[in-house]
Length: 223
Image (cartoon, rainbow, N blue to C red; front, side, top):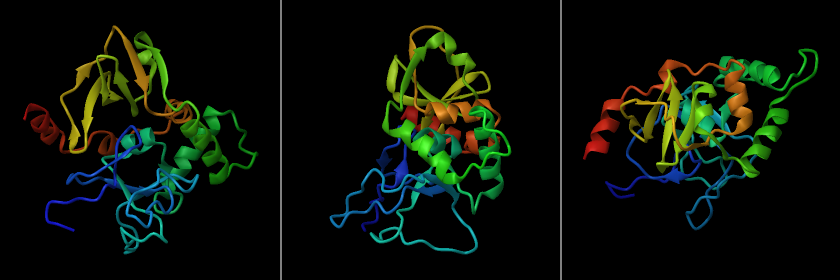
């Protein structure tokens, strides 16, 4: 691979894969995606997870068609928008927090079994059937922190809802915060089940929702 070539394994809030030199805070997978011709399938498993980039010294090959394909996210907000949940092994505490919020969001009693497979079935249904939902802009202020949206003035620009504002996303970080738009429509990139989980209390941790290289993103937008 040439000096200036990068793998197409960085995930956008739209759930697509792009090649970029920017590094992500999290890794994840959707199963073995690499085809023999070098292209990537969109998914092979219903378990779309978001993992730590380092765990117990394990190393995963990036280009092995027989193993899961490592994907990388700027932060957890991007992973959630793309449809990924926390890993039950390397992010055990976050997984249990997500699971508890999932129970609250879907009114599942504590004595009713709830497995990762159960949650993955709900999340996968939302990913493959009407994942994006258009809502009135006036309702955007009801969306929980950690939700990713686009505005009809810039439908190709993903933004993060957090702290009473929206924050333009790029692979390198978030741009200068903008006020919540009062006119037009927004499209919610984060699937409804995950929005409900966020609303039910799954935390959008500052270290994940606000990537520390936001100024780099501002520079990219100005260039």
